[in-house]
Image (cartoon, rainbow, N blue to C red; front, side, top):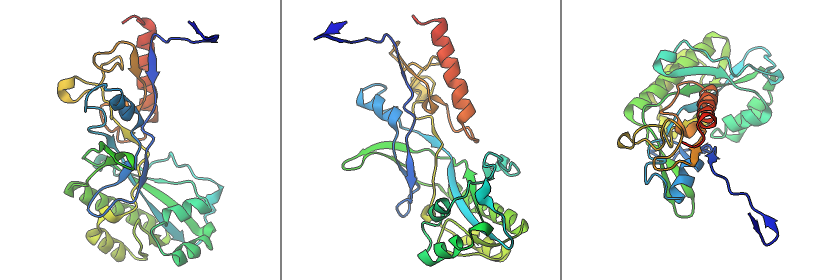
Length: 281
């Protein structure tokens, strides 16, 4: 179609791969992590697609970082295998992995600690390593529109979530101290040098005040029947639509428990293949 000398193409089918686009920060007291984002669910809501179902129950993994100081040089700045996840506690929904190390990543991991602590760790960067502990929490987040903030994800940690986060830190601390760490800086402004201190911290800590982050948010527009909160069908089409398909983490039925990259690729490949085989459906 040509309008005013400009050529306009009208697509018969659109694929939405907006992702979640979230950025997690320190939660307010008594609440879980808060995130701005929810692009896929937000776009559907703004277009009056799916009613209030998009973004109603978003599944995710909660991560926290522990900075460990060792008694000898590690040179972690030369690179780490952050995809090598320790699976020993996977049956409890907990995985531990090293993180890539830079001066900036150390400072970010210690954002809640005093400046003098950050300076002290940066001065010994060759003996420092940062570890990420990934925890599969039970509850979900909800997408809300807040005046002045836009789209906000809110999640309140349950008692089970708090217990799991405490246990996850205790396991992480035991591993690192056994591996030779001489000091641990948890996701709260304190320093731990012994197993007894780490155990006491895990027992009395308030995880809702920790610096919690997440980069794996899923199921904001999950596949399934509307009666069960589903937003789209097995073709990735929002219920009631034939020319729109969702092809990202939003269609997953829940949290994967591991990095969802390959699962997202698998779902997207399946949705695309089904469309190419039967484009008119």
